Length: 245
Image (cartoon, rainbow, N blue to C red):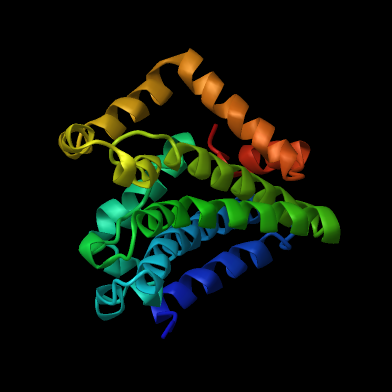
């Protein structure tokens, strides 16, 4: 049922290639390796996020996700490749803001219950959380080559930021989707109208209002510490990733 596409496998190979590039004893190669490692890993996690939605929907009664190719982990299947993959990667590269990626179109009428609908919405952010925990624990337990540890630690921090951002109860984000089945008809109508612009307002606040941005990253950092993330490695990875600053 689940057959990873060649595109997804290619993203994995690219990510591993970035990690291997850090072994070259050259500053430029090191920075390029970290950049590729983080960007490639982030692209992989975007696919895993959408796959999480799809697999829970499939198990919850929506068989259409299989025929739409959502279970192949192919980013081309998740709405528009530019909005789903390239735009989040661009925002990450420019400012380090982990924007949500694409979206899978779920047939909510086919889902068995409101609880299933909520679980489908939460499955995407939980995929980010799981990736973050795995990366943080792997770095802490196996103590890999320091540049790789730095890149993976920064990637883990970004995954947690994506988790926190996506579970906010804002129309258009997964947190709203998790509570929407239990809301009144009026609230759901409001959410449907607001889903186009509410995330944009949120992103603008995160970028333009220091207090909002600081509060958001404080929560992310606290969660990062709770899962055992290494703050020093994450800071080094961030510095190497944004090599042009």
